[in-house]
Length: 355
Image (cartoon, rainbow, N blue to C red; front, side, top):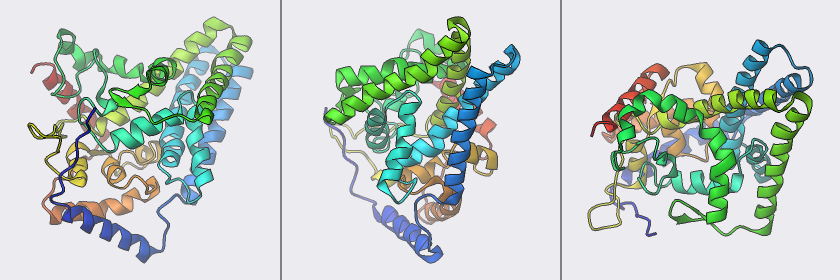
């Protein structure tokens, strides 16, 4: 598959923006990576997840409380992914490479695989955002039509009603199917995977077994398979819903673009940074709890433009980026509240169900 290239024109914006961001970190004498706020949050999230898991399995409470703890466990799983794994995989958790690798490995303990994620997310999604047929984050067919460039099916007429259920399936589908599909096919969509070393294969299968032991075997031994199944479904469905909403509110809302290469060419109309601004939107950036819980991924514009900067710096650099966009007359897409972003996403799905 021939991947499109981005236009070489209009790079003055990106050059100026990088200069302003560099000046900010030099003037404030800060590293671009995480700090004590991120590290203390990481410890809190991991300890909380271990505590909730231990209480559920070995000191099992009554049914209602147990189901609530399954929801909490799902929220903690998503938050560890957003805060620890995500920064680690982008090399922004710490200035030390081995610490970033350890942070990235949390994904493997949660059932997915860091090698597959790096290919799907860091390389493909961050480069070719919202380009149908390349960006795997748009691939939810046949259940959902997320881009106007995808074919419309009869089932899509109701997608703005049932998307909640479809999104809830993401995490379970991810850990039981899509990782294996990528592994055995050796590609993500039509894009070949990078060659896997023997250590990558060992890590893939070894951590899949570890995850199965922690989240399947041990609970079944102590609780029985029926209790495990109910709890795992509640946990997995809530995790999937949270992950999906954060992903989709950042890229599939009313004003985000879904660009295609210029007709007859393999070149995008705009340069890479402007492409990111056209295809990405922020949400609820003034909500401190949401920003804390989702690891700053509600500052998605900042993350896509500067993925190697830790999310703890996004509130500060967002003002710099917003001002630069205003100076260059480039739109900066944002929904001030999460409910407004969800409403925009629903309207986006509804519009795609009709035309």
